[in-house]
Length: 282
Image (cartoon, rainbow, N blue to C red; front, side, top):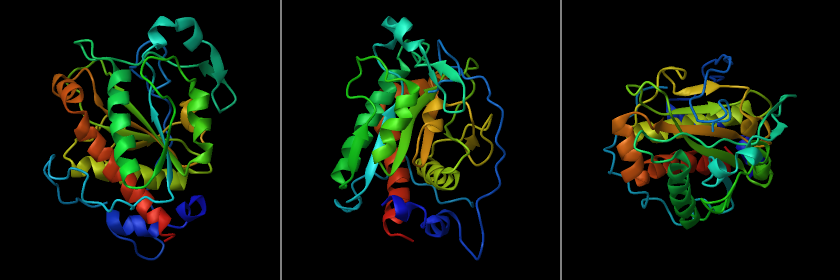
């Protein structure tokens, strides 16, 4: 499966808008780290137009039950429920994967009403896990509950070594409540081409479910490369962080709390698109 991932780029480009000759993804410049609005330790966060389906049109049941047989997927629901009560542990410095150090983890952000990011990440992550499992995938998780501490950001990348790719699930907490939308983060390096294809597939999944792209910091394609996120830096497989939305935006905050299934469907569709073409070895 891992070998097949490196060979499928053209097929994914056909799905996303066309593949001809030596066409490649749009050039992307690695940006300097922008401030992250997660609480405690900032920095540890964590094509053509396509027809838009209505948000609830796809319930994730139209794929064959065995569509992901043989695929191992690593899911990382960001942060953890016990982090806030163990600040000394999560503030411990660990390698950042670029020669420096950073905090083990953070508490994450929350809505203005107090709904925590770690709970949103867990709610969505477990739903994604269950649906991918129904489709035949083997899914490994960075944590097995929502009341623990950590794991540290370096381990959140390394645990995916045995998987075919890694998706880390987060939400943002910009102080400006008018900001809304999702974005996908990847890191430059050996796996950047495959990670870009994974990011493109997830962007497609979110757009197909009518989620808006967060333009600030991500641009029109909904993606950005960054070097400051240890989980991505430590990953040996294609990896992305998905900031599913803005928890300080009243509209998105309500949806995150009441309808995690919508985010899970968007993620599953994107993951399935990427994985299905990779397993074909195209």
